[in-house]
Length: 172
Image (tube, rainbow, N blue to C red; front, side, top):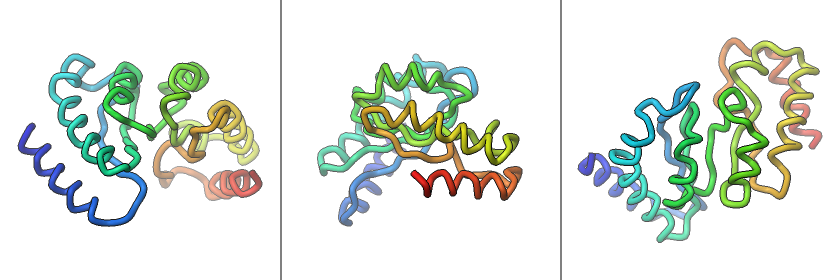
């Protein structure tokens, strides 16, 4: 694990030669109900290595953004502790978005919230608009929100729902 982390730290050093605002880390630690490996194993195997990589970004004055699908609620405090600024993907299927915003909204920005599992593939265009506005109302409060689908929009989303989402984004 340390050799893999060393490799990524080297890549971060290369990336830091360029002018940008943050580093986006991608992984998938969660499933629909909790962490794939559980919090104890995550804290033992993953957290120390993520802390090293986050520290490199922070030392260079960069924002730290993290992608992980699934429910990472158990480790959100750990991620904040090691320097996370923005968490993506914020899935309403696995999070009580109001509760998580209340708990961590002063320490963490959220990216996502418009469901690509339930809302976008199955709702009506008006349902998509209504849900996007509902999510935004909750997560925009006091700032710290990047309004977006929870993940890449899949092939099963009707084009009219994509257009409805784009329309509501554009009008706000």
